Image (cartoon, rainbow, N blue to C red; front, side):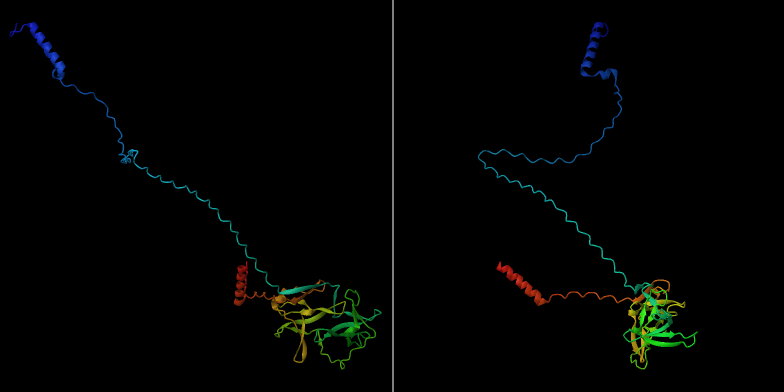
Length: 325
């Protein structure tokens, strides 16, 4: 025994203390503090703060049977939108008409060689076919009508040639003839200058002018058809628009015969541009006779607008007709 306790008593005491410590959780007193196990840290995402929840409307409390029923609000009819029709397509305006072409400068008339024959130096024969001379000139009156023909009657071996004027009516023309195209009536007598009171103009070498007095050209020949009617004159326009020699044919109808300084003179209003636009005259090609182009026709005047009294009377008549219905 030690200290009054036997050995078995000490054992019982120690066991009691261990039991008491186990029951009171004081095992740390005996064994010391224990380290907590090491756990890897896990990063948890933090959710953003959500929007505040709106408090729901309080539920309706059931009322008793004695309370009146609330009138029902009629539902608004659903109005369907009308289908908007697209506007009809607008027709594109028609393009403006092209501008009219510029008016022509000249008018050309084609004369075949078989239809007209040059007067100057054409042989003149009798009805039996005998050649008696050559035509060297013709005269015209103020109206542009042929009046006489000047014939150079040939003598013997060139001796005794003389110029004689015969009435225009004494000749017959055959432009397509291969021999003498002019036939003189045997019974024709020379025209007497003393008896003639008609103002005449010799055509060959006559100067043709414009109405303002500017020279156009010189007549070097006249073209005659089968009816003994002049169809054109051949003009030498050398020096008019260029320095080179050039001839053109001008329509006989385009000529005017006016009296100036007590003399009969031919006039033709052909400008330099019109002369340049005229094809040249050639004895072996068809004749292109030129005339000045006529002036353009004036534009038609617009219809006059209805006067105010006429419009007013029409309106009154319409209103009366409607009232009668």
